[in-house]
Image 1: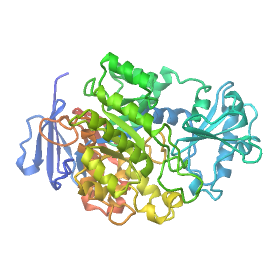
Image 2: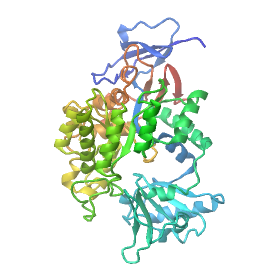
Image 3: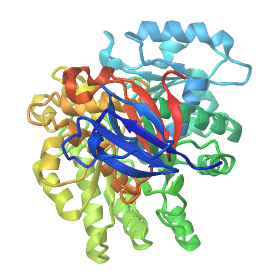
Image 4: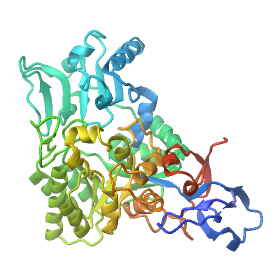
Length: 534
């Protein structure tokens, strides 16, 4: 197939660099690269180029979602009961009761996405809630924030979980304080007790999930994703999809969160390093958990939760074990990313990075903290000094950061002010990568426009950022977080022609309307992969 030139003209260009937009611009591609970009009046269109009129629209780099559970998102669309729109526990139980008769014999029923903080009951589903629905079908329900499951007695029995089951390290089997019977709630590492007995995911389903996820991403203008917590089947799935051409977005894939010393040593012995691969599929950072989530009250804080003073959260591994794993991966030359949400978890992550860097200085390591939500001023300064990249999700602040929201319920008004301080981070010159956490958060399948809106309209006074800065977090700075800013993330000469055309001019509408904007066209490497009109 011969290469061709495409010119997108007339739209407002937001180029991803943070520079002021170009109100009447043109972007010209040839083959997979950008060959011209600038004011329309200064650009000579190549003879025979396909011309796309973007007047009244926004032309920008394709979004880069720096935190996804991408294959999981696709599989959940295909197989899982969506509980994200439920407004009460009663409604959840009704949906499950309706679905149970449709579950094939031997299969498990899974539901995902509930948010008990918005229900009148303000509590998790328990095994006694689920007992009247079925005594045969194992039921596993996961909230939008993960780190916790609610299961019925059938699932508990399949996993041999009883009143005598001890809490595993980094997890909790929640029991009734009087009877000591399991309630059906399992937190963090205790979830493995259930996962170990669930029917395994097949490679075929994983491939179907990846293809579905690619279609969703392209509809939202996402041309690149960072896949978190990939297991062996998912890594194999990406390789197969790359070979057969069904991987339609670029993927930076991070190995499983169960990143033990043995796994680190195995990868080190193989010589497998961050960045191995090509422009469509690369091996990413080593992913390690240190805490859980605010929704599950397992994110680690230095002070107790306001709505449960008995706990400050739950370390999934000890801070000392974290230091050991980080140092080992760091010494092998890997990029590392640590899941840390609360200020206590973030402190442990920064301690581990600082310890590793003192023992083995590495320039431009680009170690990351995933979520990095509740920060102190001292931690912001440490992030700057250590060169750590916060990988953050603006949609969280937009959905739960307002007074009375979930963050406020968990933390109270003073700590609420500490959530997702984008303005402070950018003012310190810290590069922040934005993402969605899709797969765990179905209210936003990906929707970077919701994230842009949340960053520009941050509910905490003094934390909002400009439109150009928010776009940069979803493009060039997200590319920087994967060592790829030289080839993508901005509309500049010679870069990959990964482009999104939005349905409206973002700079010409009220900022509160950004979340309602859609995508008209998505281009990956000069190839139009999605058009809203078909």
